[in-house]
Image 1 (cartoon, rainbow, N blue to C red):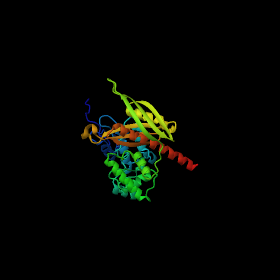
Image 2: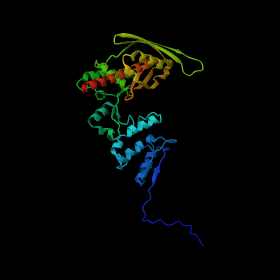
Image 3: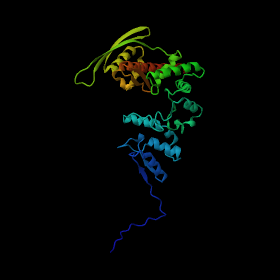
Image 4: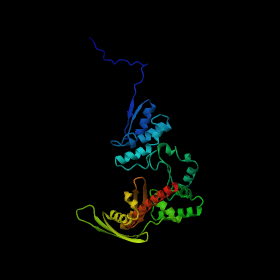
Length: 348
């Protein structure tokens, strides 16, 4: 008996079997290949939030889903689910303990950021002149960035985002813009330090609330051979509500000690400070060619469990730069708390 070696010929009338696609990003083509597969008939797409995966990652669902749904008309998830995409992206970043990609399409913090003066002016009139979609569709938001490229439109728009109306105060707005440019010439940068810029605006308008005043501080470090970290002791003198408070605290390094001493001096007057956390600390050398005399820019991110904010400090002394950023971080947190209390009273 002779067996046939040929496979049965498929019935051309039978439905095409459902196929899926699983792509990796080794050539930066994972999303593009997945989209091509869907357009060719694939019914299932495998990917990961933020593209996390082995080697160069998998197809990024945070880019793939809005491209398929908003650009090509495929039904992937509900509109309500789509508005939670940015939140999902940031939640997964927190779970895996990786910093969110600020420049990620659709869900990145800078995906809908604008900073050029003419650019911002156009966006204020018609967002579609510079945006390919409404950021709210994926749960993101438009952000006006303050930088050396800023014009008056940036300052006015940023002020509105902080609840400060400057449209009728053009002279003050121009003063703020000039102050911004002066500070940036010294090394300050407010693109990532919006809390510091908010305090700058309040000060220029004469409405910066003085919660406390640091009269002086000292930090002493003990370098112990064989240990990577150094023990530090900070003492600080603070004037608050007409009283001079002197406190000291130890920390794992000079900045931690200074932060602890300042909080210790203030917590009896402002108990809410106990809920403030210093969540990130970044240092950048601005002019490294000058060696140990180089200017240092410090960014400090703080939070209260509900909101996060970033402040900046610049100095040739890294401790002084850190002090500036830490103090403004606490000051802005107190400002937020004060504004929240005022809003509650106004609504009652």
